[in-house]
Length: 226
Image 1 (tube, helix red, strand yellow):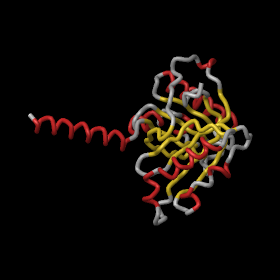
Image 2 (cartoon, one colour; image 1 turned 120 degrees about the vertical axis):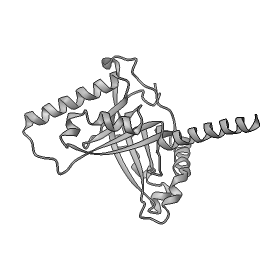
Image 3 (spheres, helix red, strand yellow; image 1 turned 90 degrees about the vertical axis):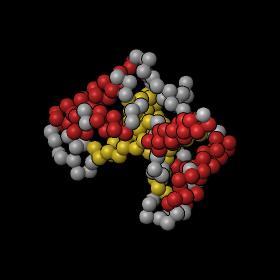
Image 4 (tube, helix red, strand yellow; image 1 turned 30 degrees about the vertical axis):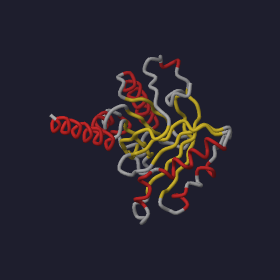
């Protein structure tokens, strides 16, 4: 009997570990391809319309949680599907199929904060707002890269921000699996955000991680902020 219980617990433990390694959600970077083909304006407009229509369809099918563009071009997707399922549905996007973007696709879990889906709302009732986006990306060419896996450096910074910075509201910290870094999404009382503050990350200073800071146009309420 004891051996049976032990085997059951072992199976559950291994299963939960595998789920954590895969990540609860999937994150997609849509990086504008600088080498994309020059197309007539009407064709670009048609691809963009198909891109938006496909996003709306995936949200209605409760596969995509949210999408939002950077102010400088490109953007992000957040999916409530696993890596394999996400890669399949990405192929349905006409702008992606036409090579307008270079994609990065990562499973992730929430390191800080939580996600609330807006599937129960009508599209017209979802407000869009400006947030700020920080990406910490592990530099695997650096000898200190394994240290980034603990994520404690990011969490220490986030805790300090929450305690000391009244004009900054950290909405979510998304932790990519396989030591691929984190994304921080926050609201700020400064129009251009607080890039200098987030650049004080210890591993950024040591060159172990690279940091990107951008403005993001994103649906309000995804991080349960309402």
